[in-house]
Image (cartoon, rainbow, N blue to C red; front, side, top):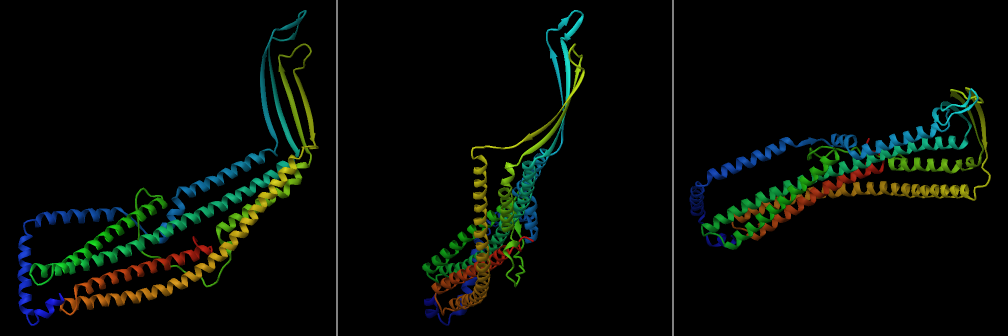
Length: 447
């Protein structure tokens, strides 16, 4: 192209006429398969439109709400709350009165003494039983401990919702970022195709070199590959978002959300994972503190009437028995001491976990704030670099068409512009992710 600018200077009019004639010739050659190309284009557009129409698009908040409401992982956590409540009901019943009824039919050889029947051959015995726990310190302690497990299950459900919301938010941002990459790769491909068509026309007309045409075609094909990769990446993210929000199909994202970043640092105790470990520590502390109750005595009362029909000669038809059971644990060969040591170990483990988690949460807040500041500056610089790179492409392309620069300079400018725009898209995605991480670290997400 540069040689053309030197050797044919002053013949711009002839070149323009020749290019017009060349375009007309190529148009005539393409008339034969025009119908086939038009039909293929219509099918492609229809398929793309149908796919876009059937795919549901959600805003960021809609995606988070749907994920925390419909995701099966959240349903499993809610089932954990129901299980803890059922266990509490079972434990509570052990310290409440119990009424039962038992009926037995005895069939044996009848025993008689003269005309009197001592033992009838068939005899029915009905025995109701009524028991009242009077003093059961162990059962009372277990009831309180079971109540703590409900609180733990509730906090776990909140933390599961947080984890699902974070996964949905990150996937949502990934769709937007990959769509930006697809847009810039598509634009780079279109620019490369236009440059290839220009270089090919010159080569076919004998005004340019085959090397320039091949370089332009190589760049166009490389951009085509990047477009396909970007489309696949978007489809994978859309499928992942569909799974997270509980939909049988892919779900698309609308656009980047606007995050409201607070100025204050906040308290790490606002985070659901911190609240969960606090609830677990409280429950473990109660279990350990109640260890002394295992050595307390228990007192139970029972009343058992009995109805025998028909009665025997020496048996009454109606009888009853009342009992007061008093039990004192004396020697257990170290069983309760071992239980207490195990409970202390469990409590210390949770305390160490809480200390480490709180330290990590404070570090997450500081790191996230630094990341937001850094990515904000990087994104602003990337936007400026993108503007400069696009100006370079325009200037270089005009210079090449006028013969003042070479084909290589145009391709280099296009590659650099594509790379700079990719960096800008990545910088914007990193900024949004840093803002989301900061809200998560502060316990402000999800609301």
